[in-house]
Length: 401
Image (cartoon, rainbow, N blue to C red):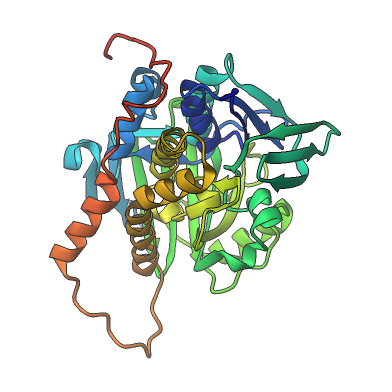
């Protein structure tokens, strides 16, 4: 068979991770990203359980750990800053509330890009304008005017996936708002963070601070309940007005955090939402990561789902000799339980944070055995096949860190 050509949309985490594995399977990979370059900073993301094994198989354990935030743990505090609970990064073998592998989204994206850029074509500042597929492949026209033919196209372009809307239907069919809005952005570390995160919760709202490798800075995180959310995710000024209105009067260090809203370089606000789809592919076009199965930031598993999904998608397509129907079906079968468990964790976390209706029936007592089993499914994930029978150019050999 002639060389397989795959187009991947999105250069955050899922896209470059998939590019890594496709390249190792002998594929010619192009990644197209609408932004003019990699986006730095962003939320601190975690790798737990099976996701750590994928990083090891990528040969990137040392690089990822070197770029981690080195957060020692987290304190849950009251309005006066008194510590109510303590969570340590080494709790539960490093897979607890604060993971031993915690890294800024932008830093992980940079690690993945640096590892793949010599063998993968990256097209920044462009996007798909049109595509048409048939039994022989997918013809793609880019906004920049270029026209190309690919064997497969994979959307790894996030919650607001343009490829999903183009091929599968409008976002309203698949995106489920969970009733919470989350914002985060970089602030000066004038709050005394010394390697420990801090979180304050009250009546459905929350404020938090996360340390980053640059000790002069911190990541602020704010959330508030919102049954409806209709602000355009691209309208930054409207988002900032909403955040100020909803967090007005909130205690702890919130006024100082909000004071930096207009001078932060990387403001982000969006609904906490999940993506639920009956199928993650149509013909030769498939989806990966948040575009296919977002579990929401409240699951703490978006990075793990992206990394594990990338490994399994490339492996199953290669094992199926690049037959899209068989490869995509096997990928979904491998991922389904892992996705469902983490989406359930995300929903439960939102329910814990948002106030219930005073007239609602009291929630039944939690079944701790069932909850423990759910955590095991969400962290342990699927058993990773070795894909011994498919091409693999091999991971880079590096000394253990």
